[in-house]
Length: 120
View: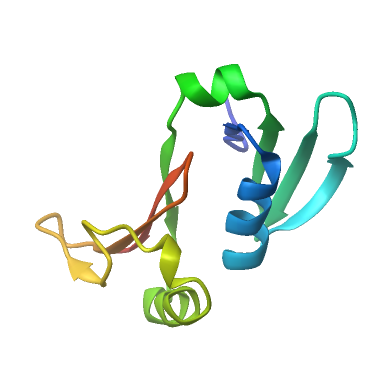
């Protein structure tokens, strides 16, 4: 059995919050757009990664996903994000930190999602 990609579904009360976080802050691009439909939805992609964003208040209130984005240039990512969108830095891990498992990490969060940026 072989898998090629993991694609998380992320639910927002207001999909525009997710667009600000993933597009404006993390530079993802919309590759499928149903944002103006009755049930707003879009697909975001960057560097071979894909995330499905949905506007659904009931599911957004049930789920608070957290996932990791692994990079080979954490300093560059941190400098960009901390300069352009410091409001998304997680208060518990708001600087690049060498973790006991030897990865460098910092964390981001918006109203619905937690993202750990990691470099091994």
